[in-house]
Image (cartoon, rainbow, N blue to C red; front, side, top):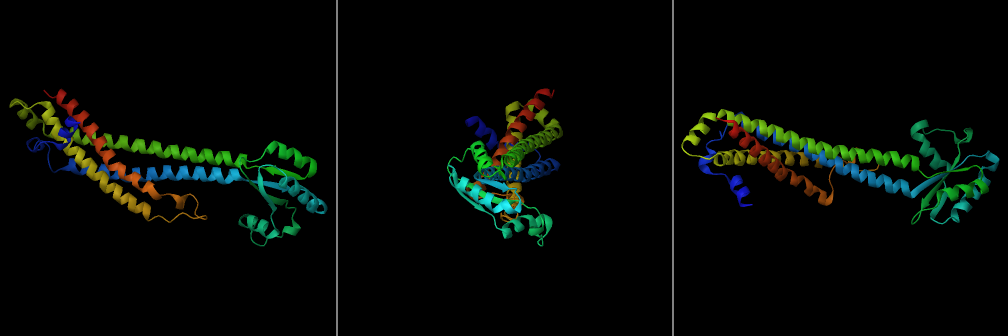
Amino acid sequence: MKQIWAILSGAPDADRVVPPTGFTVWLTVFSAAAMAFLAVFALALSLAAERLSVRWGQELARTSTVRISAPSAQEALQTAAALTVLETTPGVARARALSDAEQEALLAPWFGADLPLDALPIPRLIEVVEAGAGYDAEGLRARLAAEAPGAILDDHTRWRRPLIEAANRLRTIGWVSLLLIMLSMAAMITLAAQSALAANAGVIRTLRLVGARDSYIARAFVHRFTMRAALGAGLGTVLAMGAVAALPTADVAGGFLTGLGFSGASWLLPLLIPPLAGGVGFAATRAAALRALRKMP
């Protein structure tokens, strides 16, 4: 720990080895700020995908639909029979048949608000809400087939699984993007450090002639570039958090896009990016400096 602190604190005399101005300063600060800005949005994407996966899983897992496909003369009778079966099924909290107005509202986005339900063979829908551990789907299908032959149970399994898998993959993409961003930051800082080392090759040779050790010289580069990376990442993080805060708030109509952000304690997570960027800068610069110094004559 003392060695790390000594490297990070640097030394006033050793800092003169690293040019205080020039393109390496702007390259390091800008790349760290840009990568941190993107990292915040990658983090927000991962958290939003995780929330989406949980919400879809919970909402779709607790509801089911029974579809009554029967001649109009038997629809009411089979609907009543299906409701009786559902009301006596363990694991079913409640079941109710949707009204014509509710079914029309469900179909309106696809067919318009003036859809004539009485002129189309639209099946009657029954909404089923599960309770506790849920019900036995296969057993319920068998009972419905016996009591109401026109009733078809849809437990949303075929809809739920692809949606949850898509949300999980989106979350993985977010974390992979965050990792790639950090690797890109390390590459940019390494290039900047190597450029600074090459530009100061004459000064480094002079320092060696007067007895300076490579660890002394490397400490200056590690200190300066670590601070630049942390500063740039801090600026990028603040800008990104402001941009995320300016996004529309989540609502039912907006869905995933308006839910892209942070909530509660998750707002603290982006604050980890600047010290993480500093750690990346520390590791990248130290490795680049020591490697370059070993190659110098």
